[in-house]
Image 1 (cartoon, rainbow, N blue to C red):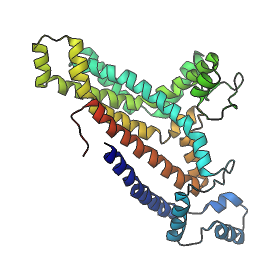
Image 2: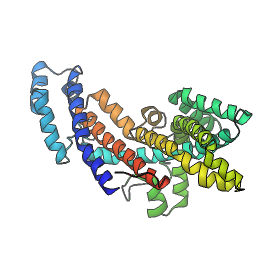
Image 3: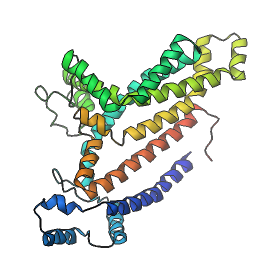
Image 4: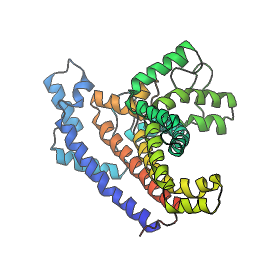
Length: 338
């Protein structure tokens, strides 16, 4: 197992190196340079040329990429010229906790609803419940995220006033300037030990978590249903029933454990994708995570943020998939990594 993990981590280097090369040349295919946004619309040609020379954008792309790789190895990912002009790594670490909390809320909703619904649909095939679950999954995949988000905001935030319509916490009631980790759930519950503040943070997570979790919910439900149906037809399940084992014991020991492998794969892939930032959800709910950060950088042509942000998110995605692969050995002891 240890050799497998080390080998996968070593493979991360060429993956990121290739991705950085692709991103470097892709950015140079875009029209214009960041200098136009830095200097404004009234900048002269001489000012633009001087800015490009100072930032190194007038050098060959391969030279710029080589310098970037050398700096990235030293954890220097450049500095953003937009907003607070922070180093890219600092800006990423500042916003990534918000994306992590949103992803956890979305996947908690998707897994908590999708797995039980998929199991129930599989055990009652061709029933009304199975048909309703199929319709729910199709709606979850088909409905646009921004439309669902706006509907939920209007119904539960504006009309019924049950839940907050945006933001991560109530700015009028609470303050999170103490610990500075930006993990608001952790700070409110563990550091501040304030139940009211914790409940407020949870309340702000509900609507964006549901909005972002609809598509993963549909995938988790469909894969769970298919996997459970396949396992229910296996010989060892029929043998367990013939031995007189209870339905609960059969489900927990034989069905669920063997059906979870493809489900865990889907959960891992969806989690990795969501950790890349959800632009539409974060925009609707004014969340301020990685998604809106990268979107703003793309509009402003902030090359340092686009290139390094993509690289950092790719690292997270690969590490999440590694964690999923390692979890297989715990779910099914027959799996061995050579």
